[in-house]
Length: 228
Ligand SMILES: CC(C)(COP(=O)(O)OP(=O)(O)OC[C@H]1O[C@@H](n2cnc3c(N)ncnc32)[C@H](O)[C@@H]1OP(=O)(O)O)[C@@H](O)C(=O)NCCC(=O)NCCS
Image 1 (cartoon, rainbow, N blue to C red):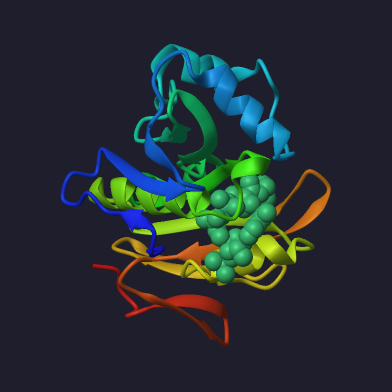
Image 2: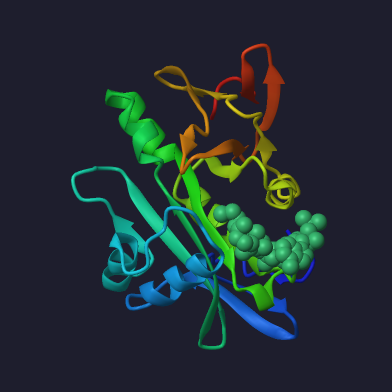
């Protein structure tokens, strides 16, 4: 955790961090904050995001905890970093739906509970480099960890060295382009990779708190072999 964080553990409903002599508070978004959240992500050129689209509507309606209709066990969470009343950063973490739906039965249910993908992470330009992004990621990991998430993944643009370094410094392992990470589930092994989207090459960033991510002959895997 970054040294300037004031950690309110054990209550993990919000996290305060001092950014540029301003206290920034990280908490789950409230209903009505969708447009501001999506505007920050759009301002950071997060790919595949539509202003006024489905995510914005869902956040405006429900706040930061989103259910996916027709997809039991799948959900999304959006946390905001607020300087006073102003939203200055967002992280949106959700079930990796396509990956989860490519599995069946118990394994699908286990993966839906246990794996979360950081889909959007963006901080307003004037607030970057002072700990807001770290606080957002830290709070999301802790909050979702308390809910049973064991593995966090993000798909990082393979050409974006600063963002890859940023994730590495926060405990994530970067797969090579096209490389998968094996996940041992109670119903057998499976593997996850970054795939391809938006005509760019992606690398998988992966972290499983309490486990190392190591490279073996068949790609990355977590140690020990069986998740608790
Ligand atoms: C990536 C991002 C979310 C990080 O948020 P942040 O608030 O700038 O990050 P923090 O201040 O917590 O992290 C400090 C780190 O950023 C580096 N940094 C400093 N100034 C920076 C700047 N203007 N932009 C990016 N990183 C910067 C610091 O060197 C420090 O590095 P280290 O601790 O890893 O050695 C933010 O830069 C951003 O919104 N980028 C554009 C969108 C994006 O690329 N998102 C990620 C992929 S979805």
